[in-house]
Structures are given as structure tokens and as C-alpha cells.
Image 1 (cartoon, one colour):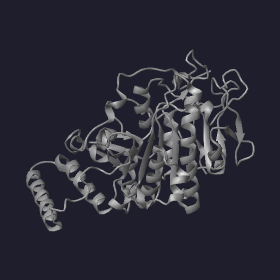
Image 2 (cartoon, helix red, strand yellow):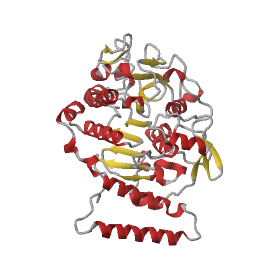
Image 3 (cartoon, helix red, strand yellow):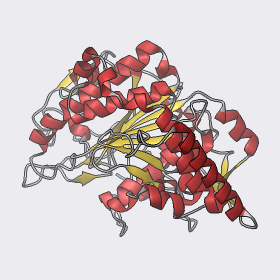
Image 4 (cartoon, helix red, strand yellow):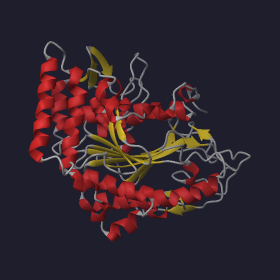
Length: 428
């Protein structure tokens, strides 16, 4: 039966409160979050490790993906199929990914608290640290702070998503808006990325110099944090202007487009690969539409092939290029879906027993950790909360989660939940 950490509860937070604008990111929510100890930060900053975070918004069903239970009361109509690792099976909706299982690690024993999107999305992506009166950063912002942008000088945390783009400063929490996500809405670059023909390069440089001098004058007698985020936005914009070829979809080979899929998620994952190849530290790619309270089986029959196609393609490509040795890949939702099938032939929210998949740097390959009971209703092995995953991800990236702390204006804060630890079975 579920332990005390596995009782669902609600928060009055909107899942859309993340969304912001470049202007808001430049002037709002300035923070002074630092990192202790600084020596470790310098060492980690030299690392070439990166993250691909595939966020499956709404809740992928573990029963139609990583933990199938065919021919059982709650199993649904889909079969389980063999993978490239003998003895490990996944849903038949993942035929391409099944052939990449020798690169993957699956954890089937997640047991988390929140059965609402409004609480679950934020809590899962922040790692559920103990409440210390501050808003913790999302995982992408944490990695951006802990590891820096790397040699590429590109934004350390980019988010490729359907819908609107802009600078999402809220992801950074107390770290301050410069560690927020730069979102490429519909996979498109920020507006006005290309310098107008009427503005010469020399005149653009003069304008930038004038802005810098105005900031310097304004800062006299004031803390640097007052203009830090504003300056950072302009610096990032200039870097992207210099690398605008990253957004040129015509540069993708026809073969790659066919392999990833011409659908939205395929195009976004292909852009995500390009961002990783260019050296972006943390790339998040979203897929929406997984909240299948009604018609769950037809919904997954439509959604899963797109996910399967693009996810298998990027795993295959990262492995072939050798990048999988340095890129931590995570594919997950905010929770799973109920074993019980409701009156609308759907599955509801189920944080009590669900799964995610991992691959890449320091991750054991071709393994499954944890198990649910034969009906898929509860975890039978040791239960793991999201705090355990944050400890595990940080360690995979070379960050010691037990001896690294944030410095929030003199307040030391742990980077992961104090009461959780690393899942050693997931790491090589």
C-alpha cells in the first residue's frame, strides 16, 4: 500500500502561471540566489554534460507505455511487446522505442503526492523540496544555475513548445529571472531576431553601447541585480542573432524529417537535437494533449506513435554520434493515469504508481527499476518520490546533491529534498 508521501493533495496554483514575457523576465522577480560551494560550481561549469527534458504534459498512461498489464482487469486493449533487451517489455504503442531499450532505463515505482495539474506540474519540475518560504527553481533553471551556459554562450535553458514563446522568468524561482527559460513558441525564434535592413551593424553596436553606459550610470550606488536580468536578455538576444541558422528548418535533411515525423512534436524534437548539438545546456521539449479522461485508448493510439517516432529517433541519433554519453535524457509527465477505466472510457490522474524513462550520461542501460503489482494499481517494490529523481539526476550530471547548496541571500538551501536520496540502481 502507498506510504505517507503518497496521499494526493491540492494547491491553488494555475498551471499557466508559468507563462511570462521577455519584458517581465527583464524587470520582474529579481533574485539573489547563489550557489555553495563556489569551487564545485566552477568545476561543474566546465562539464560538457547536457539535458534533454521531454515533458509530456497532462499525464501519459504508464499502462499504455512503460508498464503494460495486458490481459488484466485494468490492462486495456493493447499488447505488450518485446524490446531489444530480453525480458523487458513495453506497450505495443512504442515499437520504435522498444528497439532502443538497450539505451534506456525505466523506473516503474514512482509514487508522488499531487493528483492535480495545478499542483503536480510545478511540484514535479521543482523536485518538491521542503517548504522554506521560497519558490524553488524548475529543474531546467537549477541546471542553468549549477552548470552555466558552457562554451557555446547560448542560453543555458531553452524550451521548445507549442503556443506562445518568450522569456519565462517564473521557472527560476528565487534564483532570479536570468535563469528562466527562453521559450521558442511553435519552435520559432524570438520575434525581431533579424536586424532590420534599415539599421546598420555600426548603428546597432552604438545603440548597444549606449544601453550599457546607461545601465552603468544607473547602477551607481545600486546593487548589480537591479539591471542584471535586463542586460542578460539583451546579451542572449545578440547571441541568438549571431546563431539564427539554428532555426532554419530547411537545413534539416529530408531523411531526418521523415524519421522524426513531420508532425509538430517531431519538428520540435529535431530542433531540440540541433540545440543540443549547438551546445545548449538544457533543452526542454513539450508535448501537450495527454489528459485523457475520456477516450483514453483512442487518445493514446493517436498520441503515442508521434512520441514513439521522435523519441526513438533522437535516442538513436544521440547514441550514434556519441552524444548520449554526455546528454541526460528524461521523458516524463506530472503523474500517470488510473488503472481504473472511468465511465467515459478514460483514465484519470494517478500519482500513486507510475513510470518514466531515462537515458544518457551515467545512466545504466537496458534496465527496469521498481515494479507495480499485477493489476498496476500500487507499487510493490520501494516507492520513489520526485525528490529521489532530482538527487539521481543531479548525481548523473556530476553534481553532489548532498554537499551542494544554493545561497539565497545568505540562506543556505538544499538543491534536492532533504529526506530523499539517489536511486543507485539507475546509475552506472
